[in-house]
Length: 406
Image (tube, rainbow, N blue to C red; front, side, top):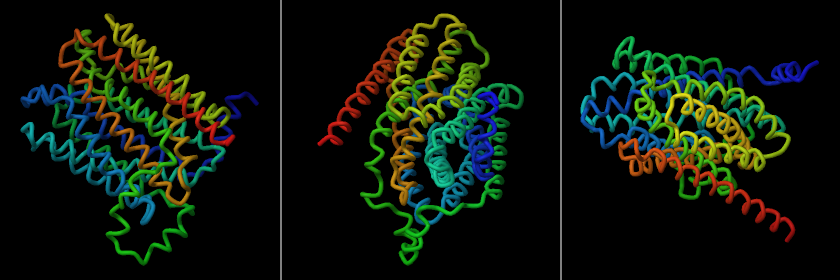
């Protein structure tokens, strides 16, 4: 049997719940990302051109605030409860966007939207970590990452055509409908036996508040610090791309501000199928060093782009790099996290993700400042961040070896 045949044959080993969770995540990612390419122009029309960074900055900061709560609820009540809450609130916010037509009102909704989306991914990733055995987590997170990539980039690519066809209010409505579909998929998921089940039963006598509100020592999982640091740095790069690609596309004369993401996702998907397997075989450090190096190449290609061809080529490199880094970081976090408090570990990683995106957005606003002449400086800074990640991994591995030999 060919390698491809073996690969697809092995997919039968995953339970049905895994595939439903993947589909749920894909649809949910589409629902809240499709509005993003039009947000810069929308906020500018409302009179908030100088607050573009807040579109994602407030959203990701709020999501980071939500993570400790979602992690504790996932560990102490259920994984699905945080998923239900996150999707329901996201649906409501999408319906409300057309009625909040001031800059302050819009930014308030972005904050609440971010808080809601801080719940669903924590529950779904913790549940996947429960039902997938350790030796296959790299492959599983690679497949799961493919769904995230398709949802993220596919949603971004769909946003502009939908807006052109049905207007901004129609785009918000479409986003809400996709959220409803994601919510309905949850009814097809039966939670499996979980490693934390006994611990959760022991906590059943605690008050509801104590099972929901995290203590200070429950916000951060120190065992996942290394993947969280790399996640923060790569998320800063993602925040830069997410904010500036629509403006860069307009600068180069592209009508579809999501085309970069459409090209990007195709290569991310292909890469993730392979990269997850390589994580299981070689571990996190080798994959992440390659991914970070490619992020440096992609950043320099983007920053020097003067043609649509080069710009889209940089999207291909960025997609390959993301396809390598993301499954490695998710699987590395799942492997290092305390089995009883898997939700806390995944929450810590997502906090790093959201704070990184927020920091990337804020830094982008300061460096770019709505001036296309600053694109190169912006992406040089991004390349330096990736180099910092490579250096960090080098010293983290040396420290680990030193401790193991002590």
